[in-house]
Amino acid sequence: MSDGEGGGVQSVKRALQIMNVIAETGAPCGLSELAAATGLPIATIHRLLRTLIGAGMLRQEPDRRYALGSALIHLGDQALAMIAPMVRPHLTALVDALGETANAARLEGTQIVYLAQVPSRHQMRMFTEVGRRVEAYRTAVGKAMLAQLDDQVIAEVYANTEFVATTPTTITGLDDLLQELQSVRRDGYAIDDGEQEVGVRCVAVAVPGPPGTLALSVSGPAARINDNLVAKAVPLLQQSSSAIAAANRATYPGLPAPRAAR
View 1 (cartoon, rainbow, N blue to C red):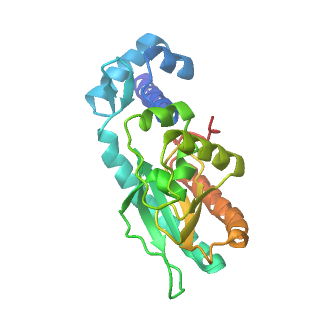
View 2: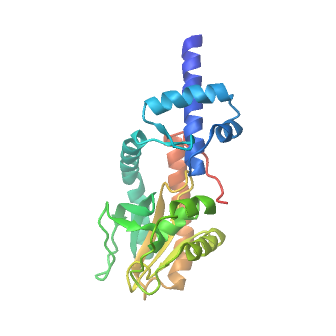
View 3: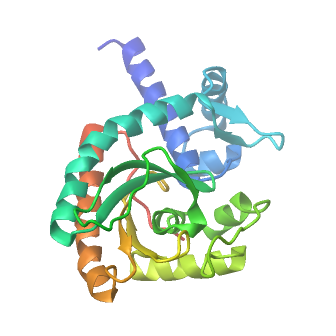
Protein backbone atom coordinates (compact mmCIF):
# COMPACT_ATOMS: atom_id res chain seq x y z
CA MET A 1 0.00 0.00 0.00
CA SER A 2 1.39 3.40 -0.99
CA ASP A 3 1.72 6.33 1.41
CA GLY A 4 -1.11 8.05 -0.43
CA GLU A 5 -3.41 5.08 0.11
CA GLY A 6 -2.32 4.81 3.72
CA GLY A 7 -3.04 8.51 4.27
CA GLY A 8 -6.45 8.11 2.66
CA VAL A 9 -7.34 5.18 4.90
CA GLN A 10 -6.17 7.13 7.94
CA SER A 11 -8.34 10.10 6.95
CA VAL A 12 -11.38 7.83 6.57
CA LYS A 13 -10.76 6.31 9.99
CA ARG A 14 -10.42 9.77 11.54
CA ALA A 15 -13.58 11.02 9.83
CA LEU A 16 -15.51 7.99 11.13
CA GLN A 17 -14.05 8.63 14.59
CA ILE A 18 -15.38 12.19 14.54
CA MET A 19 -18.85 11.10 13.41
CA ASN A 20 -18.94 8.35 16.04
CA VAL A 21 -18.07 10.85 18.80
CA ILE A 22 -20.96 13.11 17.74
CA ALA A 23 -23.29 10.10 17.46
CA GLU A 24 -22.34 8.79 20.91
CA THR A 25 -22.68 12.25 22.47
CA GLY A 26 -26.17 12.56 21.06
CA ALA A 27 -25.80 16.33 20.63
CA PRO A 28 -23.78 18.81 18.54
CA CYS A 29 -20.10 19.06 19.48
CA GLY A 30 -17.60 21.91 19.29
CA LEU A 31 -14.03 21.71 18.00
CA SER A 32 -12.55 21.52 21.47
CA GLU A 33 -14.90 18.68 22.46
CA LEU A 34 -13.99 16.72 19.34
CA ALA A 35 -10.29 17.29 19.95
CA ALA A 36 -10.56 16.09 23.54
CA ALA A 37 -12.56 13.00 22.56
CA THR A 38 -10.46 11.97 19.55
CA GLY A 39 -6.98 13.20 20.49
CA LEU A 40 -6.63 14.67 16.99
CA PRO A 41 -5.11 18.11 16.26
CA ILE A 42 -7.60 20.95 15.81
CA ALA A 43 -6.26 21.64 12.29
CA THR A 44 -6.84 18.01 11.26
CA ILE A 45 -10.36 17.99 12.72
CA HIS A 46 -11.19 21.28 10.98
CA ARG A 47 -10.05 19.91 7.61
CA LEU A 48 -12.08 16.72 8.02
CA LEU A 49 -15.12 18.67 9.18
CA ARG A 50 -15.08 20.74 5.97
CA THR A 51 -15.00 17.54 3.89
CA LEU A 52 -17.80 15.90 5.89
CA ILE A 53 -19.98 19.02 5.70
CA GLY A 54 -19.42 19.17 1.95
CA ALA A 55 -20.63 15.57 1.66
CA GLY A 56 -23.71 16.26 3.81
CA MET A 57 -22.48 13.88 6.50
CA LEU A 58 -22.24 16.71 9.04
CA ARG A 59 -23.70 20.19 9.37
CA GLN A 60 -22.62 23.26 11.31
CA GLU A 61 -25.09 24.75 13.76
CA PRO A 62 -25.53 28.55 14.23
CA ASP A 63 -23.47 28.29 17.45
CA ARG A 64 -20.60 26.79 15.37
CA ARG A 65 -20.96 23.33 16.85
CA TYR A 66 -21.22 20.31 14.56
CA ALA A 67 -24.06 17.80 14.23
CA LEU A 68 -24.78 14.76 12.07
CA GLY A 69 -25.99 15.68 8.59
CA SER A 70 -29.03 14.72 6.55
CA ALA A 71 -27.03 12.50 4.18
CA LEU A 72 -26.74 9.97 7.01
CA ILE A 73 -30.53 9.55 7.20
CA HIS A 74 -30.68 7.58 3.95
CA LEU A 75 -27.66 5.50 4.95
CA GLY A 76 -29.20 4.82 8.33
CA ASP A 77 -32.52 3.82 6.79
CA GLN A 78 -30.79 1.37 4.46
CA ALA A 79 -28.61 -0.05 7.23
CA LEU A 80 -31.60 -0.61 9.49
CA ALA A 81 -33.55 -2.17 6.62
CA MET A 82 -30.69 -4.63 6.28
CA ILE A 83 -30.72 -5.28 10.02
CA ALA A 84 -34.42 -6.24 10.04
CA PRO A 85 -33.92 -9.72 8.47
CA MET A 86 -31.18 -10.41 11.02
CA VAL A 87 -33.49 -9.40 13.89
CA ARG A 88 -36.47 -11.48 12.80
CA PRO A 89 -35.11 -14.91 13.93
CA HIS A 90 -34.55 -13.46 17.40
CA LEU A 91 -38.10 -12.13 17.49
CA THR A 92 -39.39 -15.54 16.41
CA ALA A 93 -37.41 -17.21 19.19
CA LEU A 94 -38.90 -14.77 21.73
CA VAL A 95 -42.42 -15.57 20.52
CA ASP A 96 -41.69 -19.30 20.74
CA ALA A 97 -40.35 -18.96 24.28
CA LEU A 98 -42.88 -16.48 25.68
CA GLY A 99 -45.96 -16.80 23.49
CA GLU A 100 -46.35 -13.03 23.06
CA THR A 101 -45.73 -10.60 20.20
CA ALA A 102 -42.10 -9.51 19.78
CA ASN A 103 -41.03 -6.20 18.24
CA ALA A 104 -37.91 -4.33 17.13
CA ALA A 105 -37.83 -0.53 16.94
CA ARG A 106 -35.42 2.37 16.62
CA LEU A 107 -35.39 5.88 18.08
CA GLU A 108 -35.86 8.84 15.73
CA GLY A 109 -35.95 12.18 17.51
CA THR A 110 -38.75 11.99 20.08
CA GLN A 111 -40.46 9.08 18.32
CA ILE A 112 -39.82 5.39 17.84
CA VAL A 113 -40.25 3.61 14.53
CA TYR A 114 -41.20 -0.07 14.43
CA LEU A 115 -38.81 -2.01 12.17
CA ALA A 116 -40.02 -5.60 12.55
CA GLN A 117 -42.61 -7.68 14.38
CA VAL A 118 -43.43 -11.34 14.87
CA PRO A 119 -46.99 -11.69 16.20
CA SER A 120 -48.17 -13.92 19.01
CA ARG A 121 -50.09 -17.05 18.10
CA HIS A 122 -52.81 -16.19 20.62
CA GLN A 123 -56.15 -15.20 19.14
CA MET A 124 -56.02 -12.02 21.25
CA ARG A 125 -52.65 -10.46 20.42
CA MET A 126 -50.91 -7.17 19.78
CA PHE A 127 -50.30 -5.97 16.23
CA THR A 128 -48.32 -2.93 15.13
CA GLU A 129 -47.62 -1.98 11.52
CA VAL A 130 -43.94 -1.95 10.56
CA GLY A 131 -43.02 1.68 9.93
CA ARG A 132 -45.49 3.03 12.50
CA ARG A 133 -44.23 5.96 14.59
CA VAL A 134 -45.16 6.47 18.24
CA GLU A 135 -43.99 8.97 20.85
CA ALA A 136 -41.03 7.38 22.63
CA TYR A 137 -42.06 8.38 26.17
CA ARG A 138 -45.25 6.31 25.84
CA THR A 139 -43.48 3.06 24.93
CA ALA A 140 -41.17 0.56 26.56
CA VAL A 141 -38.86 0.43 23.52
CA GLY A 142 -38.68 4.23 23.51
CA LYS A 143 -37.82 4.45 27.19
CA ALA A 144 -35.24 1.65 26.86
CA MET A 145 -33.43 3.61 24.14
CA LEU A 146 -33.82 7.03 25.79
CA ALA A 147 -32.23 5.58 28.93
CA GLN A 148 -29.00 5.11 26.95
CA LEU A 149 -28.72 8.89 26.51
CA ASP A 150 -27.54 11.49 28.99
CA ASP A 151 -30.21 13.39 30.91
CA GLN A 152 -28.89 16.69 29.51
CA VAL A 153 -29.33 15.42 25.95
CA ILE A 154 -32.87 14.22 26.75
CA ALA A 155 -33.72 17.59 28.29
CA GLU A 156 -32.53 19.35 25.11
CA VAL A 157 -34.46 16.98 22.85
CA TYR A 158 -37.69 17.45 24.83
CA ALA A 159 -37.23 21.17 25.55
CA ASN A 160 -40.04 22.20 23.19
CA THR A 161 -42.09 19.00 23.26
CA GLU A 162 -45.61 18.88 24.63
CA PHE A 163 -46.29 15.64 26.50
CA VAL A 164 -49.73 14.38 25.50
CA ALA A 165 -51.46 11.74 27.64
CA THR A 166 -53.29 9.06 25.65
CA THR A 167 -54.12 7.01 28.76
CA PRO A 168 -54.31 7.69 32.52
CA THR A 169 -50.80 6.23 32.98
CA THR A 170 -48.98 8.16 30.23
CA ILE A 171 -45.94 10.17 31.33
CA THR A 172 -46.89 13.85 31.11
CA GLY A 173 -43.70 15.80 31.83
CA LEU A 174 -39.92 15.86 31.46
CA ASP A 175 -39.25 15.42 35.20
CA ASP A 176 -41.42 12.30 35.31
CA LEU A 177 -39.68 10.94 32.20
CA LEU A 178 -36.20 11.49 33.65
CA GLN A 179 -37.25 9.80 36.90
CA GLU A 180 -38.62 6.85 34.93
CA LEU A 181 -35.38 6.57 32.92
CA GLN A 182 -33.38 6.34 36.14
CA SER A 183 -35.41 3.23 37.00
CA VAL A 184 -34.80 1.82 33.51
CA ARG A 185 -31.03 2.27 33.90
CA ARG A 186 -31.13 0.65 37.34
CA ASP A 187 -33.26 -2.33 36.28
CA GLY A 188 -31.84 -2.86 32.79
CA TYR A 189 -35.24 -2.91 31.12
CA ALA A 190 -38.27 -0.66 30.51
CA ILE A 191 -41.99 -1.21 31.01
CA ASP A 192 -44.95 0.31 29.21
CA ASP A 193 -47.84 -0.23 31.63
CA GLY A 194 -50.79 0.81 29.48
CA GLU A 195 -49.13 4.15 28.68
CA GLN A 196 -49.74 4.03 24.92
CA GLU A 197 -52.90 1.93 24.92
CA VAL A 198 -55.12 0.94 27.83
CA GLY A 199 -54.90 -2.75 28.67
CA VAL A 200 -51.60 -3.31 26.84
CA ARG A 201 -48.35 -4.02 28.64
CA CYS A 202 -44.86 -4.22 27.17
CA VAL A 203 -41.31 -4.95 28.37
CA ALA A 204 -38.25 -3.83 26.38
CA VAL A 205 -34.46 -3.91 26.37
CA ALA A 206 -32.10 -1.71 24.33
CA VAL A 207 -29.59 -3.39 22.01
CA PRO A 208 -26.06 -2.44 23.13
CA GLY A 209 -24.32 -0.12 20.72
CA PRO A 210 -24.82 3.44 19.50
CA PRO A 211 -27.52 5.00 21.72
CA GLY A 212 -31.01 4.85 20.30
CA THR A 213 -30.16 2.50 17.46
CA LEU A 214 -32.38 -0.45 18.33
CA ALA A 215 -34.52 -2.01 21.06
CA LEU A 216 -36.47 -5.26 21.38
CA SER A 217 -39.76 -5.76 23.19
CA VAL A 218 -42.44 -8.26 24.04
CA SER A 219 -46.02 -6.99 24.28
CA GLY A 220 -49.52 -8.26 24.90
CA PRO A 221 -52.64 -7.88 27.03
CA ALA A 222 -51.81 -6.69 30.54
CA ALA A 223 -53.41 -9.80 32.04
CA ARG A 224 -50.80 -12.00 30.29
CA ILE A 225 -47.77 -9.67 30.53
CA ASN A 226 -47.71 -10.06 34.30
CA ASP A 227 -44.70 -9.77 36.59
CA ASN A 228 -43.87 -13.47 36.20
CA LEU A 229 -43.73 -13.18 32.42
CA VAL A 230 -41.65 -10.00 32.68
CA ALA A 231 -39.16 -11.81 34.91
CA LYS A 232 -38.92 -14.57 32.32
CA ALA A 233 -38.78 -12.19 29.36
CA VAL A 234 -36.03 -9.83 30.52
CA PRO A 235 -33.10 -12.29 30.38
CA LEU A 236 -34.30 -13.60 27.02
CA LEU A 237 -34.54 -10.06 25.64
CA GLN A 238 -31.08 -9.29 26.99
CA GLN A 239 -29.63 -12.44 25.40
CA SER A 240 -31.18 -11.58 22.03
CA SER A 241 -30.03 -7.96 22.29
CA SER A 242 -26.45 -8.99 23.07
CA ALA A 243 -26.44 -11.47 20.17
CA ILE A 244 -27.70 -8.80 17.75
CA ALA A 245 -25.11 -6.31 19.00
CA ALA A 246 -22.33 -8.87 18.53
CA ALA A 247 -23.54 -9.64 15.01
CA ASN A 248 -23.67 -5.92 14.20
CA ARG A 249 -20.10 -5.40 15.39
CA ALA A 250 -18.92 -8.39 13.35
CA THR A 251 -20.69 -7.14 10.23
CA TYR A 252 -19.88 -3.45 10.75
CA PRO A 253 -16.57 -3.32 12.66
CA GLY A 254 -16.56 0.49 12.51
CA LEU A 255 -19.51 0.74 14.90
CA PRO A 256 -18.63 2.38 18.23
CA ALA A 257 -18.49 0.10 21.26
CA PRO A 258 -21.39 0.17 23.71
CA ARG A 259 -21.11 2.80 26.44
CA ALA A 260 -22.85 3.18 29.75
CA ALA A 261 -25.57 5.83 29.96
CA ARG A 262 -24.81 8.67 32.33
